[in-house]
Length: 417
Image (tube, rainbow, N blue to C red; front, side, top):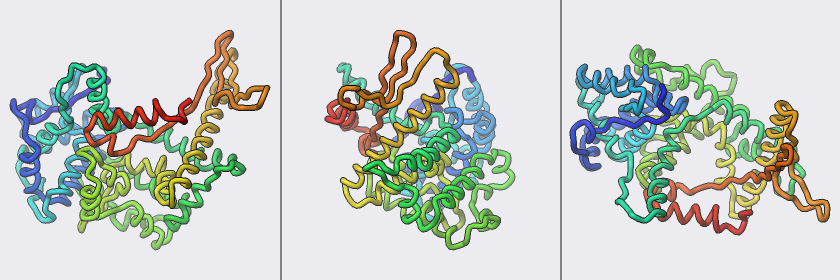
């Protein structure tokens, strides 16, 4: 497709009037909680929108024709095939939103969403799209407009952006192993792999290998497979039958990554940080019901191979001092990785540029910056920085809260260079 951006069909767009959140919930609450959650996880995996930033067009068309009557489906498919500003019905943020709402308001025993004629349950997806933005009041203040826009864009970018699993997993592996090991003499050294193993009761390589195996299953299933066998997204006992890892460790893996709907409901209610806060799904991306164990979101599972070990150790540490030490050490690891990346890239591809990692003043030995690239008579001084924004600021839909956190961490912070 030529377009870099896409939007979505909504009930209000097609019918002239948006639904209220109460109307959406009243319609959703007729259906079986477990079946809705499983259906959302299956559609999410089939669309693979994280690979390209938009849903796979062929898979999207197949799902549209599954849930809408022929006339409506033709209209919706036509909109998704536009080269400029295509419109889709299904997308990752919407499906996570519906799964979360189903956990919060659907009964365990309800109507089967697949038992109805095409159209009825399809309307529910359109209704959900009425509620994928905050809709802040218009403002004439420029700074307020920027804050409003940022609050709207941040969750959309997080859930709808392109992801490169391969690069992120490879980078994280290097940081947890090679570059962490090289810094064992660092005063802030934290043995993240060992701490992770102690926490989960198995070797990190075993745990990460199982994560990768489950992820591989979900990124390779197509719409045709689901149409032929709706149970294909379930992680049955036979899925792990060929692995050499003992059953007791498989149970530890399952315990670490899965949660039942009642547990997820409690987590969502305990931390009510906005409609687009899916932190409970991030923590346990495998959802276990009476009939299925399935992955609600493959990118959340991929995060267990990327940032997962760091955050699992972070939240297990006893106090702020220990957590601050972990973050300092991780900053040193990241600097080591970045310097390695720049050194190899420039040495292998350039005859005219020079890279100087961690340069220091000759007078007193203090560090100038994290790295300098010299090209002819020009020089680029680089600092590698990272910060985290709380879930409350990202998902609450409060632009002022988000602006204040950005100001405190990236502008007024005493640690800022």
